[in-house]
Length: 377
Ligand code: 9MR
Image (cartoon, rainbow, N blue to C red; front, side):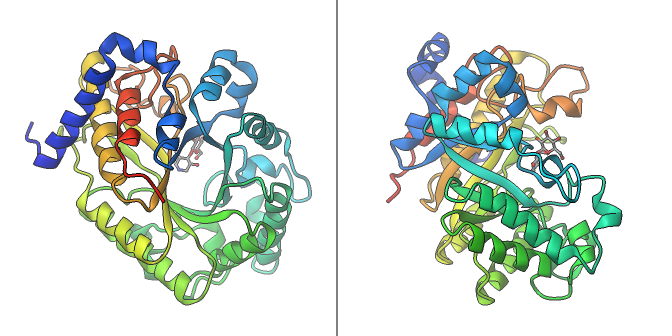
């Protein structure tokens, strides 16, 4: 496998992380070392997405979160569908449960998300029309944003609005919200309405545009980055409130072609542009899939850890990046388990703790990357 200098440097850093803690020491140190503390030392918030169902039912998972994280986000429970059993009713029990957990443990809480093309309720189609769409959207944000106002660090106001292959001007996704509100402007109406309403109902929350597929050096990522930057610039020009870009960071240890993907130059240029616009950046949903790494667990964990080290070691160099969240904390609960993505039938190992909630080399690599980041102002 051919690797670039950048990857080589990243690889060294990750292996160094494992060596520094010691292979057995990874497990021993986890109790005393946390990603929360590692991040806090540099002014970076570090945490993860949480499954509220697991938080309610799995004491070991709850304990791990309490030990490790400084910021949490619900994996699903703040989304439109889960919150809206019917057009006139709301289900807040699970979201409230996480909000209370965060508050009790002094953790910051993210909101994810007000607007997305997925996890919409079944009643959406048929009920939401061109006539009532704006009202439905505004009411939703008023009700949900209002309930948690003052308690939310940052809201993913709009999630994944760019899909260049849909062929719309500006690269916008042909989403259900795009269809029912005016999509003809350089900023679709649903996006403008969502951000303006979010600012009004929760002026303290940082307002984030969140997307995936903008991390790589491939042509698809480059095109998507350009479209996202177009959106962010238009939002600023039109004075639509916006504070940060969320870079989801669902990345790969090894690509389908068997090569180690390169993350770096294009993404860092984008982050620098975002910083110059006066905006912050959050790594919102990081995980490293190992679906194309051969079966041996040691090799898989090493490849995943190398990627944690090189990716975070690179991205955290820019002080605009103020938070790192992984999409889950243990391989026991990862959305990638539902993907059945490994052809050998094995489960993936994409997170800093394995399914037995023991720290992996990725944990050491994440801690090391946080500790090595420049201190934020
Ligand atoms: O992890 C989430 C999974 O449990 C849900 O079933 C899924 C529904 O589409 O959404 C997953 O989370 C996604 C997140 O909300 C937005 N970015 C991609 C995440 C992984 O698919």
